Amino acid sequence: MISIDVRNASVDFPIFDAKTRSLKKAVLGLGKAGGKIGTDRRIPVIEALRDISISLRHGDRVGLVGHNGAGKSTLLRLLSGIYEPTTGTSRIVGKVAPVFDLGVGMDPEISGYENVIIRGLFLGMTRKQMEARVDEIAEFSELGPYMTMPLRTYSTGMRVRLALGVVTSIDPEILLLDEGIGAVDAAFLAKARDRLHDLVKRSGILVFASHSDEFLMELCDTGIWMDHGQIREHGPLREVLAHYKGRDPFGPPEVEEPPPAADQRKAEQENDAEDQAVEVAS
Amino acid sequence: MDLPAAPPAVPSRSFRRAFGDLAAGWAQRQLWGHLGWQDIRQRYRRSVLGPLWITISMAVTAVALGLLYSQLFGQPIQTFLPYVTVGFIVWGFIQGCVNEGSEVFITNEGLIKHLPSPISVHIYRLVWRQTLFFVHNLAVYFVMVVVFGVNLGWGSLLAVPAFALLVLNGTWVALLVGIVSTRFRDIPPVTQSIVQLMFFMTPIVWVYDMLLENPATAARARFIEFNPFLHFVEIIRRPMLGQSFEPRYWIVVGSITVVGWVMALLFMRNYRARVSYWV
Image (cartoon, rainbow over all chains, first blue to last red; front, side):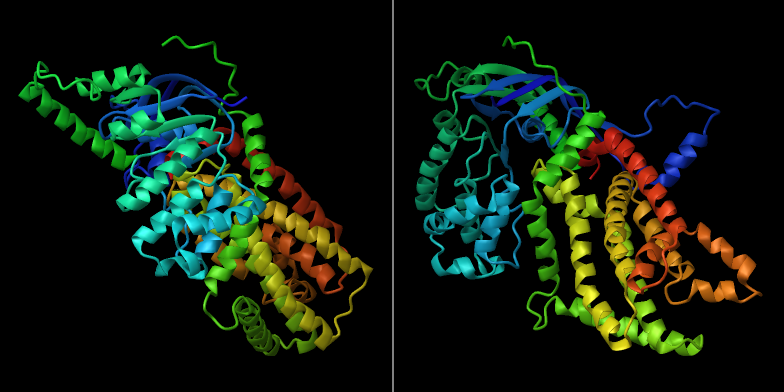
């Protein structure tokens, strides 16, 4: 039985700068028995996620929304098990396939074919399983004879196609998708969407972070709205989206919706800028 | 939203999770086995001789230094050359595990942050890669055995368990040093200088027995026994050269193996989950 159970989880990143991230500091720091200068933490900490509680079961299709730096990517990493919570608990049962960055685990010096195998192994497949899928991936990515050429000879589009081909060929129990997987031409994207749909159907649990309302509605039914590292709302996707956007993006075009006050918008932007810095530091 | 009662989660800091990591990493041997090979092929990609270069460069170093030092110390070439070769091969393995171990998580930052794999996968990949280097270098040793007629006996088979011990120790060292260096970035240069220094303090291009035979140096030479690397080199070099079995080297290495693994497991228990935060 595949499941994700997270309870009161927080993720705090220690930020070591060039000075604190050294043994010298730690050793000298221990010696300072005398004057306690008001700081109980020598290392600054960024609270990327606070008090997260989620339970997901087979069949759950969750869309993640929130501003940049609201903690969507960190939450995905928490759900994948990359980060274990600093406080609280998390328990993940099932084979996790995280698709955060299409390029990771790809080696430019080896052939497309070999990259397919390695990438598949990274995603928890076996060699045999991947070898059985290579032809299908080659066909989907329209690479043909290029499969035997080193990856560095590929154009960016070709790489994305290959990576998408691999990712959509696997059988994940828990599928975690981060946005930014649409960097291909429109015709190809339409083809990729079909495969993505199939992939989502095969997977037991889906968590998908995206800024595209249409894409979210296509793939998900529930939504989680992340705000400043906390879950602001968790419920039916359309409602969550409506609250997040301040209007129902799929409802009739209403005009009664007042635009957010100018100063509030400014404050949000500032928050965004701060969060952005957090994201980089993490 | 109301959440159902969560099943009890195993705390991050537990020996169960530490052993679980090691076991799950082992289960992924298809992955790190492939990556270890890949690392080697990668290094010699597009070169005509490929990984054969590992063997060639080891042969050149061993022969050149063997000839030089045999002349300097007045040692017969037919015994000294195999001695230096085996020393270099073993040292190459030790040095690789320690030095690359200190950067094992730092260099794999991208993988650690994007793919949830047990951290032991990176350790196994490293030790496997070093093992492959070792095997490539063994070719030089076997040539020496034939050329100089090294007198091997049944006792030489002890080299196999000796190498197993070397692998076991390389694994805990890489784990321990890897975790500490990820947190404290001054550790890699420190370990690298220490390893460099230890090369000169370990009998590889010089002979320990020679110092013991010389009454002028015999008393002081005994201090070399405090060098743990001596014992690691000796347990495998002695059988490979057909020399007698010396139990004390095995006892020392065995003890270090136990103590080292206990330390590494303690670090695994406490800091395994922190590695992805630190990289």
